[in-house]
Length: 142
Image (cartoon, rainbow, N blue to C red; front, side):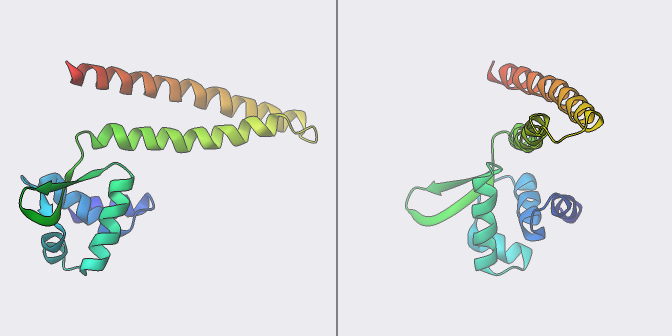
């Protein structure tokens, strides 16, 4: 769990978010916010902020139990696909900047060539990854 937290931290997540994600991956049942905070030695406020962030990113889900007013959390149905789609979206934002640079008339021919090469290669790889993700999602629906 701690190794996953450190890995996610290197991707820009707070360490506590990585620890929450790691805990929910290994838990068999949904976990309440109070129990998450206690298990991780974190404040309830920190657990709340970080569960909301993970939920917004589609990595975890909030669920309720009949007759219980507390919120519970579990890992999303497919966190791998979700994280890969987010990475592709980030990648596409960089590609968009590269494409915009191609329209800059002050850019040297050598710079334009580098931008064109980057945009082309990254587009091909992004298309391959998306095709793989679509195939994975399709096979899981069957």
